[in-house]
Structure formats: structure tokens, C-alpha cells
Amino acid sequence: MKIAVDMRMSGKSGIGTFLDELIPYFKDSSNEFYFSKPDVKTFSIKEMLFFPKDELEKINACDAYFTPYCNIPGGIKVPVYSTIHDVVFLDVKGLAGKTGTAIRKFFYSHAVKKSKAVFTVSQFSKDRIISNLKCRKPIHVVYNGTPSYYDNVVPCKVKENYMIFIGNIKRHKGLSVLLEAFEMLLQSRPEIKLMIVGSNENFRSKDDSIGSKIEKINFHHKDAIQFTGFVENERLKELLTKAKLLVQPSLYEGFGIPPLQALKCGTNAVISDIPVFNEIYGQLPVTFFKNQDSSDLKEKILETLDRDFCSNLSEIYSYKKTAEAILKVMENN
Image 1 (cartoon, rainbow, N blue to C red):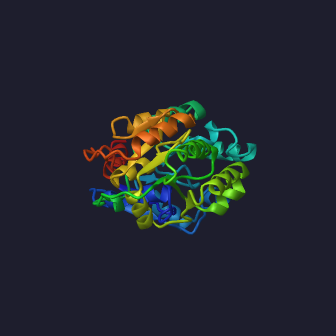
Image 2 (cartoon, one colour):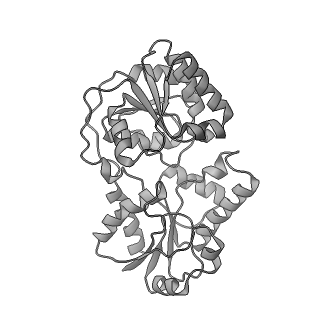
Image 3 (tube, helix red, strand yellow):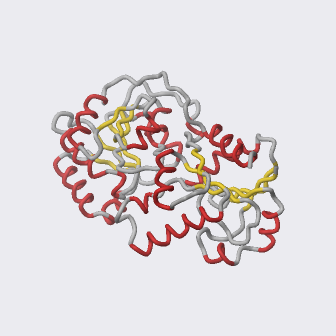
């Protein structure tokens, strides 16, 4: 079987990581691949209406087309297999304006219409896709894994006095709940720092209430909250390895990879008890707290800060399994 793969997001974070982790396992299979990377912006008019003819000829000479996201170029005649990781912009109000939400829904719906089957990364996301898009096409759950550069991590035996948050300012990431819990935590554990992977400028400008909260905490507890700015993969792995724990207070995720990364680094994780986290992490050694309950989060952090890491970590998720699941669907259709 010859499969065309949209490589335009390769090398980028997020979707790009998902794609790049699949490729080595694709290549190890018995299939033949055409890796498509034309100079055409994703989700553009050119992609929809004026995709290069020579590129379309090469794609349409294949048996199938796989895209790691929900953008599908116009003019593809072979069976299409797309990926919708989540529909957070349809589920969480306020993440985008009416126009932005409508545009995203158009692309999600277009992907469903044009695809022979759709991949997603959790049963939770599958249920939300069906609910929001009235999808009747086959939806296959192919879970994420941890990136390959987390293989063979050497855990740090002596942890440093900080916990880590990986995320952004968007409301569904739950940072405001973490800040409330952290402020209470400092009353009994003033030596603990909060490391936020991201830029202070972005947090200050995009959400003034969170920026003010961070400034207030740092005023009363000097440098209690620290920002890393952008970090490369190896630096993030180092930060995770040395951290006492990772806190993931998300209100909504399609999967949520940071807790997996933390566990691979030998670091405990405290995460919200949202449905998708119960699905993904229910069999793994994480600590759940009541979603949006800052008092419970503070208590769970206190219980976990000095706890030894459970080293018996089963390999439930891997991109090898993800790639095999994707290829099996395409080969059997």
C-alpha cells in the first residue's frame, strides 16, 4: 500500500510532534510512503482551492492520504484519513470569538465530510466529536505517547524545591486554580517555587487578572513564581527530571501529554479529575484532585511533594502503538 502523508507541520510543536513521532514507525512498516511537503500554508484559500497540480498528481497516485490534523487540501481523490485531536474551541466558550469558532467548526466539519475515517487521541475526544459535529464516519481512538527523546531518562534522586506547570494562559488550562492553591501552599511550604514553562510577557498581556495574581504572589514571596521562557525539548526534560512534581490543573484536554512526560522523568504528577484524565491516567501512578477546587489541589500537592516516585511504570502508551493502530485502519479499508 502506498500512503501519502502531509508533512507540512513537521518540526513544529504539538501536531508536529505527533507527526514526527509516527514517521519512523511508518517507515518500518511494509508500506510505501510519499511524504508531501509543498510550500502551501495550512488552512489557507490556496490549500482549499489552488493546491499545486503536480503535488495532487503525486498524492492521487497513492492509495490513501493521511493528515495529522483536520486540514484537507482540495483536489484529493484517494481515500483521506484525518486527525481531530480535540474540539476544545467548540466545547469551551470564550476561547475564540463567534467568527473564530465558526471557522474552526467549518474545518472540523469539512474534515469529517472528506474523510473515509477520522483518528482521535481519546475516547473522550471521540464522544465530543460525535456530539459537536454529528459525525457518522468511523472514528478510531489512537492514543498519544511520549516523544522518543524521553526514552532512557535517568531519574534525579535529589529533587529541587520547585513544582512545574506546562501550559498556556487559556482558561481551560486551569492556571488560576493552581495560583490559588500555590498561594495557600506557601503558608506552610515557603521554600517551594512554581516553575511556569512559558513567557512572563505573554501571561501578563493576555490575561491581566492572572498577571496581577502572579505579581501579588511574587511581591509577598520573592521570586516564588519563575518563568522559563521558551525551552528546547532537552531543557524541558531536564526541568521535569529535577522537579518535585508536575501539576496539571486542566479543565479540558483532548489527551494531555505533560503528565506522561513527567512520569517518564521519574516525577510525580498531580492532575485534575476531569473525564479525559481519568480515562488516560486511571491506571498510572498519578494523584488526582477535585477539578477547580484549589483547596483540594493544595492538600494533594502537600501529600505528594515529598512522596517517593513509583518506579513500576507500565508502558501503556507509545507512538509505536499509535502508528500501528493508524496503519491497521488504513490497510484494512
